[in-house]
Amino acid sequence: MTAAASPIEPREPKYYLVKRHLLEIIETLEPGAPVPTERELTVELATSRTTVRQALSELVGEGRLIRRQGSGTFVAEPKIVWPFQMTSFTEQAAANGFVASAKLLAAERIRASGEIATRLNLRSSAFAYRIERLRLADDVPMAVETSHLSVAAFPGLIKHLRQISSLYRVLADVYDVVPVSAEESIETAAASPREAALLGTDTGAPMLILSRHSFEIDGTPVEWVRSWYRGDRYRFVAHLSTA
Amino acid sequence: MTAAASPIEPREPKYYLVKRHLLEIIETLEPGAPVPTERELTVELATSRTTVRQALSELVGEGRLIRRQGSGTFVAEPKIVWPFQMTSFTEQAAANGFVASAKLLAAERIRASGEIATRLNLRSSAFAYRIERLRLADDVPMAVETSHLSVAAFPGLIKHLRQISSLYRVLADVYDVVPVSAEESIETAAASPREAALLGTDTGAPMLILSRHSFEIDGTPVEWVRSWYRGDRYRFVAHLSTA
DNA sequence: ACTCGAAAATGGACTAGACAAATTTCGGTC
DNA sequence: GACCGAAATTTGTCTAGTCCATTTTCGAGT
Image (cartoon, rainbow over all chains, first blue to last red; front, side):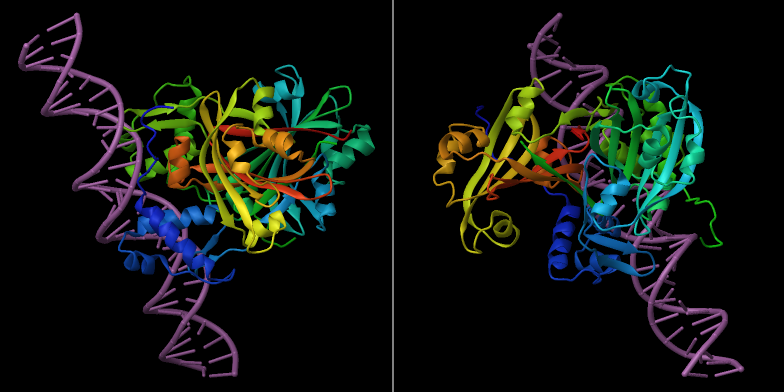
């Protein structure tokens, strides 16, 4: 313990004061109710619109507010809870009462390199599928998912995928492959313009990226997939036990 | 399927162009190397400093860059991978070769209400502990953790906690309570000035919030805890299997 | 009553600049 | 050469404003 164990007292940026003011307002309102306009807040709090917008942007990013151009800014609905486990998106959705679907955005063969080659245990020039899909639950876009699989291991995969939307079902039915273990990771990043447009949010909005690296019983890598979810709308939940 | 199934073509904000330019630069550099200064980028890309800073801020939030006031902006080290499982922070750290410690920031008795009362299954006026700790691995701050437990279930807890830093060890040794199941959730939010100061980041930086609601074998709630991790530095990893 | 279109209101993107805080640089002094 | 302090450099915060895109409002015309 050093001598200078003084209480940490960070100076508060002005935009944070605006944010706290807005949080108090939000407390008193129902979801869907409008908060004051940016220009009103600028006058009321004697600040600039830039500063007000910074506070609003954080609250939007945290899922507390939603903004609609030309209309106003409104209190958001609570975040959607999304359980995740060792199953497919389709099964996860079904377990929670949603109908899962997918819109194929891209399906191509690429040359594996760098991380993809490593993850799929391929030579650096071998072919790999790159399959990008928009994941929907009850027709509401949930995530943009980019999967990579070995072409050699699953010949003709794209054709099958156009008929059966569940990748895991195709793997099981057609290729008799069932992933039995996986390593999943979660991190944050900002939405690119493309993802933002697909998911109906703004470029730069905070996202939750769920990566899954799945394996067969003998340790053969099956799939490496990264799914981008809107951080302002979803909360991932896992049930754990020591049993 | 509507007629207007046109390819989604979001217009790209100018700051995103700056961001892509910076990503190209980052690719060619080693961690620790400086990127051009804000004013250099302003001139080079014929834009305003505000726009440059927006691009830089996203890259900082994603853990690609770090900024040092008065010094410059530098390529960041890769994110730290942090496995999480049904064990205590102390055990998790040990399993990964770190020495875990904790600095007690606050330990108080509060009146349970709202969410806390619900989570701990307490009457709305019952007492609850609110324990706030800074979590360290090898003396590097990792997370700010706020735990809530029932006072009635664990009398004298704070006294014990001042001697044994591991909460789970206190629960096991003193009260003979071992949580056997838990519900964990992950979401994003922006750092408050206080958390930012404690973790050495900036107010508003994206954080990963890991919440844990743990239970005894008979379903009695033991603890409800929320841990704030720096989103730019950590990636949470879980191993899953169908076995 | 209805429709259409202009005007107003609102959020989205960007600019140019001021001042503050922290660090680095560098010249003068000992 | 070592040290100190001023100056320059760099990021941090905030302001005041412009122009655009979208939505809402509302009045004129039918």
